[in-house]
Image (cartoon, rainbow, N blue to C red; front, side):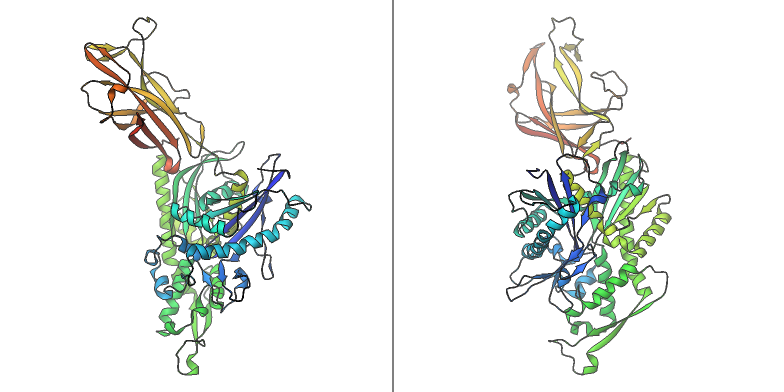
Length: 588
């Protein structure tokens, strides 16, 4: 809420496995949309780094009472902690990583925690330095965005953090705890929340006019980050007056990001040192070391078009090593272009396999070939070799599909998070392509001649009409998380089975009919409802032809999460759950 100042500040934080980015945006209380180009990225980092939009996700503890060192302050040779974000998820065991050699070579040295520290503590310590840095730069950010200096008292601040879509609820809670421990949200007008990285990526992609997306485009967004690769598919329903999309498949991820290339580099060093790796100090090869900084530069610019050779001098002169002679204290390691191509081979195979899998799932869900564009985002997507290799592989394996890359793919997530912070929610609405409804009996008085004839039941005619109650309407747009409920009635003749189907119907007509008789109305599935154990006498009932007929009242809750294009129907009667059905939506 904008209080007094007439605007609020949004701060987006993309805390990644290897790099962290920060973005600022202003939302005025006069409304209006902020486009993606109006977002300000942090380009100043301690100690004196300017003109760079990210900082390493590194932390080094001090023992003299001084603040902990972080980002660019962590120099080669310092004991530091990297990739700690991965350790928040306690379900992620070392053996589960896609690249086993990374765990074999480095053991617990890279994915380790300081003594007496839990993952949530270490992440909070790192984020506390991020929080202090943001606070120091808020006055300048507001001045740039507003065009003048401002009195910052009374300005609400919303902090939005991106998280992997595959994190469990428990891991998300740990991240929220770390954010709060770091000091975010403590101000009287401050608050924070989290958003998934695929959602942020989608907002940035669909807010970028340079992609020239058209109605009926099927778009796969592939977020290649430092630790993981996440993929989601969307369908563009409209582009006028603004672009509108719906999610086709849920996010799918794998641990085959940029660190998978690092793991193969470690594997090669291990094999070529012929046993000397065990005597190599971790300070020589850990993230942030001179060796890994140089390899990162090579990896980032490598395009695979030319043959080249790089020499690395590894220093064994460190406390705790036991090499006898001084000429053994340095070894030269040679890296060649073909080595790097080999690093990428399996990783690219995993990424292209994920893409093909999601394209197949999207096509199956829509009943046709729907995906015609792939957008690569995330820091790892900046690799020219990755871009060209994926373009070539997808053209060979799928055919007519465009591969698009933003000018700065590493900034996509944080820009999208800033947009999400301005909106205060995720993608706004989703389109329903059919009418969906349920049938309900409606009793009527036999004395009323204006009523239609009742339902036939054996040799009898029951005084009821069968009406259609439509719960989702064609071409309507529903917000994510939409829920609604309706009450229907079923007929139950005494001695009938107490397990009854509640039919789910669909119609493609612009205005769905209220009664049966139209050939367009079709049953697509049913909710199996169990009335066993319920006291039927509590339902309305009457005696017809000497037998009791019950009007079973059922409350059906319909939710429209649009995850994998699924509608959830949940039935209750007399306060008890009696049935549930998940229905995959039809497409256009």
